[in-house]
Image (cartoon, rainbow, N blue to C red; front, side):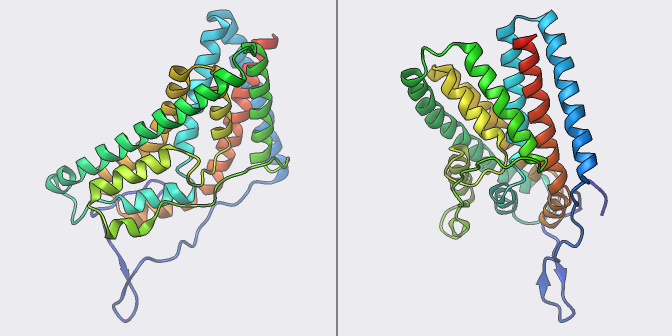
Length: 285
């Protein structure tokens, strides 16, 4: 298989010798890089981040630059959350039915729209909660202090992703309910899955960028800002499901995700260190 998922049909099962349909086990997985290679990537991330932060400081106000850094982190974090049990599940369970055609895509479109609406509702609920709590508990905290704290936390979690530092990672070890597909029509399932995933803490999310996004939403002290931050993260989470508009098989998508699992963790760490370093360079430079 090449490095991008693709096929002529939505569902193309393999078959055992007796003719029974099956999905073959993935045999090829990405391996962790050596400690030296991971150390080099961490150094490159820090250097790139400092350079980016210094450049931003000369072009934009601090507030605008921090907003841009946070927006990139939130969107990338949402995309990288696809490499988690729930990301795998949503891509495989929210599938169009039948062979690929304009008609099958049209029939599936309401499911995708409902899924996006579920994410939007999740952002409204979670963002409102975080904005209210932040406004009460952290409303008087200066922006610089909260931004420096989040930047240091991002770097620490980036080092954690590269395997050099142990950081706490409390998560609810739960997935979206698979049996829902037997009890509801596809659009309802899409809505329920979107809401469950859009709340972010009801299921397992594998990227620590979620903590930075949550911290930023709390530190904003504003319901509107917190909703916008969570919504951007949720946009990144929802977009990968749109791959089902293309003629790809579930087997092809899942195998591609498995192959890039380890690289996704390293990209996660690189982005956390780079953006954390950019924020520190911007604030302390």
